[in-house]
Amino acid sequence: MTHVPDGAPCGIYGANPACFLAAGWLSAGHPFRTGAAPEGFADRLEALIGQERAFATVDRLLQRCLGGFLCELCGEEASSSELMVPDAVAGRVWHAPQLIPHYVRAHGYLPPDGFVAAVLACPDLDDPAYQAQLVAIGGERLAGLYAASEEPDGEI
Ligand SMILES: [Zn+2]
Image (cartoon, rainbow, N blue to C red):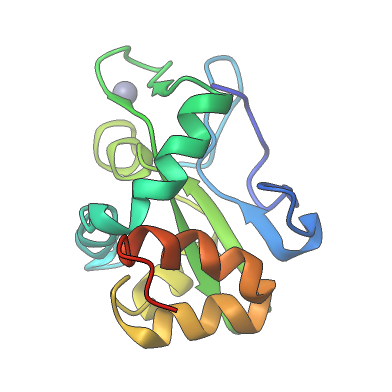
């Protein structure tokens, strides 16, 4: 997939690029930071990634644009969605691929410290606090991407 340096601003879905920071968009031929992540980080990251219901709408957008991702480091893991992690400290939203727990566990990848802290502090994706943080940082349009997938009956 497309390589984006860790911590770089990345615009997605027409939202303000200044709202987003990239994490874990690894690609073959581009070095990345390795090391031991704090206790519980990989587990929490996997738990958030596993909350798939929130990804439905984003999935469709990404598949239309990018056609899914393959781990370029080993070719053995594929995914087609991503995770947004609000970072109240930085006032940004981290944008990471669904493969990021695989990079951590299988390839020793150590994401930026700010991303690690944000994941450890991130509410569950169906927690209203998660939505509220996205709105505070990225506005209603960003949060609406998730709301649309959570309320298929159109409750407004
Ligand atoms: Zn891999």
